[in-house]
Image (cartoon, rainbow, N blue to C red; front, side, top):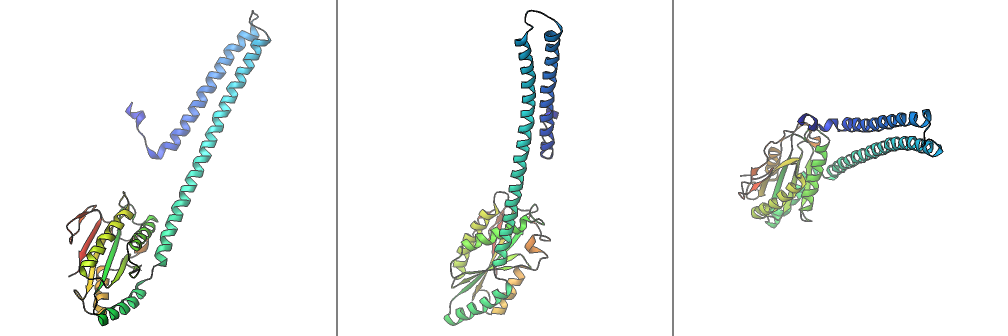
Length: 279
């Protein structure tokens, strides 16, 4: 019996169609067989029950069997039409979600904007003798998502998750060539940057979902703890988020296989998210 209980998701449509055909065929065969057996007794032999009432019952049975078969065929067509509409609606929702992710990435400023904002914030921090922190977030799509349109949606969800965890004075940038986000945290020292990184990790874990669509590596750069010039910070960011071909679409991006990565700064176990401090 296990042979008949084996279910292949790719054959569900064909199996359902075969079940409908079998049900209609069985009903049709039984109806025709009963009608033939009744016909000879009603029309070929004269006995007490033969009369207009019995013949009316016979034709009513034939009509009822025909209506039943027609009803089954109609229900099958309706269910098939509704399922087709549901499939089209799901495809439209997926397309809209992918387009929303692409719009989110297109709305984020790029690397040149990061350079301009970085120079301005660094000058302000140097004159006011305040710290300045930079968080580089490298997004790595999973093996299932990488190379598909779902990668764009994953990048967009990651960007939305990061923006929701930032302060109004913080800035976020998307580097298309590397598929990474860079976040500027003005006036935040190294300890505060670590706390912000923990909040960002939680948001990315929620955005990744139960299927772990992507993993993320968060790395912190701080002025004046690590570097003392704008050029050094920009060079460090470029080293942390190297160029990757077609990173924005998920093509050519190495898929991360590990699902649990230890956070080095806090020592906590995080699923698919790693935070590092640049020495």
